[in-house]
Structures are given as C-alpha cells and as structure tokens.
Length: 90
Image (cartoon, rainbow, N blue to C red; front, side, top):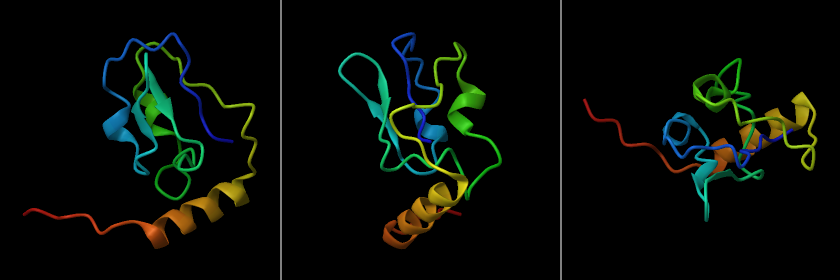
C-alpha cells in the first residue's frame, strides 16, 4: 500500500527529504505522496521514514493503493533500475 498525507499536514518540511524514492512533494495546500513512487520504504528501511518523522502523525496507509509486500518490492526494484545515479560528495 502506498502512504497518504492527510489535510492535517502542517507543511513542516520534515518528511520530504526523508523519502528515499522522492515520492513526496509539495501539493497545492500540503505535501502529497506519489503512489507510483511510494514503496513504504520497502527495499530501503524496515519502516516508512516519513511516518517515523512526522510530528503530527498525518501519514496513514492509502486505501486506494493496496499493495502486497511483494508488489512493493517489485516497485522498489523497478524504481532502482530507472533511478538516476546520485552524486556522492566526499
């Protein structure tokens, strides 16, 4: 299942940089999650990072995008194949 940011979002900017799939962006009124990119952090972390850092707990599962763990892993693998390489500064 993809996640969903509800209207309780306070636009604190904490969740967006935590998303390893760049699925979170600013919407018209508050942040939104692209269900095509959200894997609930499967493949990256054991728990969804946005949920972990949200100070107002406004990121539930999206009932319109039900996916099994296997489907989330397949999405993660597809995204990894099409991801642009990240610049490593060091």
